[in-house]
Image (cartoon, rainbow, N blue to C red; front, side, top):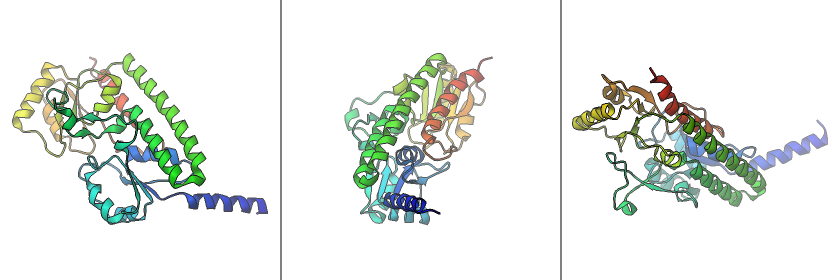
Length: 299
């Protein structure tokens, strides 16, 4: 190998060594971080597969990943509650970036499962932390990620800026395409397993017929199930959406004997490959599920 080639490899290796060790909590956050870091480094992902961010338990290898991280991106303590203690004990010196606190991120209060409205004292109520399903919030998150990486790794600042700018352009195009697709094929009445989609619905003018449960860890009682079955019939609900992170048994119970079909809607992208494109595949899959429900229910 020539001298020039050797110098190039050394320079490239030096740049890679400069990249901070970055960890992201869940797939959508990891995807945005990976997009900003493209060509510089690869972030590590904590919660993969069909695991739920609500009740996750870290494995020893993941605890090690946290302890070795320079930067950790997560939504925040209201969502990934499992990370609160490990972050304090395993990564006290790492930069811990709660993206729900990023400038430009719009927060919405948790809704009432029956009225689908924020309570009157919404200002004092918990905030809905599924912030990533609004592409505008994703843009704000990308800006925060890029600013954090630039400050930590100024040698690669130009790459982070370039990647973040390209991501924002892509997010805007994706938002416009989703709006056009939903306008061309409006979803029929649908019911969701838990209120993970408020940000997506608010951005694109959608509204579920009902929410099965605000807390996916606590299934509704018998009275609530009967009320939901009545709602399915009265509202002519076409699809009741389960989630890969939870058993579909309750959804099948609700749809049994009705014209509604059980389907799947996934706010985390459990079955999607991780990486910089994953976030866009996630949004596309949501739109496909919502509009596909209408197609499948046409008689």
